[in-house]
Image 1 (cartoon, rainbow, N blue to C red):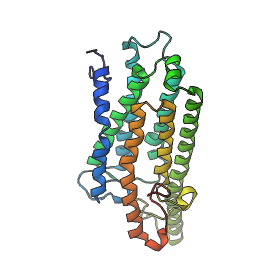
Image 2 (image 1 turned 60 degrees about the vertical axis):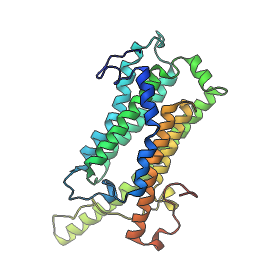
Image 3 (image 1 turned 90 degrees about the vertical axis):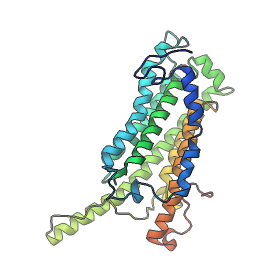
Image 4 (image 1 turned 180 degrees about the vertical axis):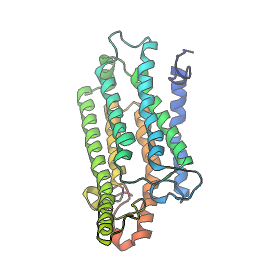
Length: 300
């Protein structure tokens, strides 16, 4: 068995044997995520319960459960390659660096910017926080290890890995990723605008009535209408899946960590979208929701 040094020797970053063990377990994550189909409770967002003893404040909880994902990738990418004989003396090729950059770019927005610019964030239950933290660390380590040398580590290896059209497949994957990223931001911002408008309305009413306090917007919801919201209720989920599908394309169809990330995201988010549609129907009525899909147009 090979050995690797790090914060947790052989595990963080993992040696090759443990990397394959983690991946083999990681592929079973959808079985765990499928439990959400049978639960009406989800301690985050619309369905969070403000009075729960185990709640964490929204912003710091989000930051601390999301940031470890890309930090784990960066840590693995900085510590593992020098320990692998397969790493060329010139360093990893541009493909590895670009793919790592895409991962980090997404999470600079999702993990840091997103909670900081949100007008408000509902509390997050400790169990949800821990589950998300585990997801992020595992995902960051698996993708980081693949990009560190357990996947292709030279340009010639990438050419063979993405055969028969390596440059085309890599480029198309990156384009899909960025289209998904931009669409993700756009639809997230539409949700933010709902609360921004409500904050402005409350501030205007307070000024006109001479009151200083407003009731806040933590639990203010409307039916969004911009972009893909016209046909579905959770397009920000759908376009994030497109984003990570593009990442998988660029990594290559044989990249198990990228495939796991895409499949595991869908497995964990689709049940929430379907239950979220039920929540919208209960709150606003079936007539107002109409024939909108939950998160996959024409399917669900």
